[in-house]
Image (tube, rainbow, N blue to C red; front, side, top):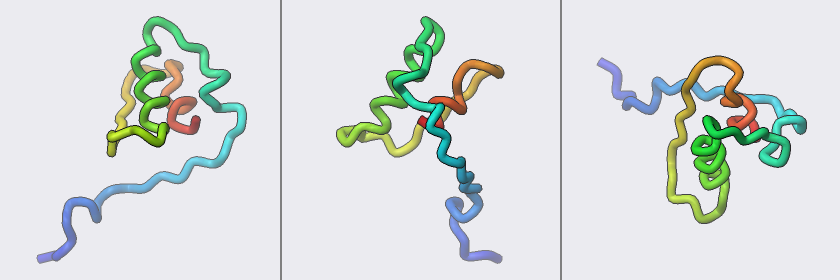
Amino acid sequence: MSNKGPLSRQLILEFPSQPEYSFSNFIVSEGSKIAFDAAHQFCSDSSSFKTLYFFGTKNLGKTHLLIS
């Protein structure tokens, strides 16, 4: 039996730096405002969030926000 905890099974993904993906050029729509605000707050120094999870169909800006 392994002594590894549940965190040892997490896959850490590395995303390359892509300057074209930033908060300043993200197009906020009615459907993406909540995700944009959550991502922006998550990246702020005052954020108390430890985890942020994006899900949805293609072409909604998930990768853009993740890399921003």
